[in-house]
Length: 102
Image (cartoon, rainbow, N blue to C red; front, side, top):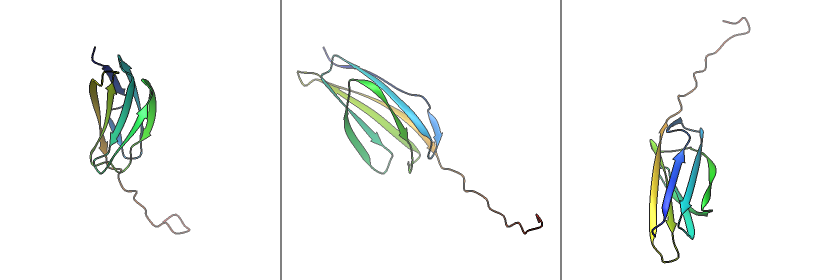
């Protein structure tokens, strides 16, 4: 039987620098990988068949994608992907104030 994947994020829209939690559960699988793609580069790591990770989304190109790939003992695989919209952080506005509060 082909692997089945449940994949969720706790927020679908964030501001750059915010943290999201990704949770997954892979059934009928012997191994799993998580790929995080921020639009500039992607990183892949081995993960437990069920679990969660908190990710700080920085320097994303408008969208970050989290993909779980699960593989069974017969080398059959399944993939599931979720996306998070990442908005740029607004620049801080600084104003000069003299010692008299002006």
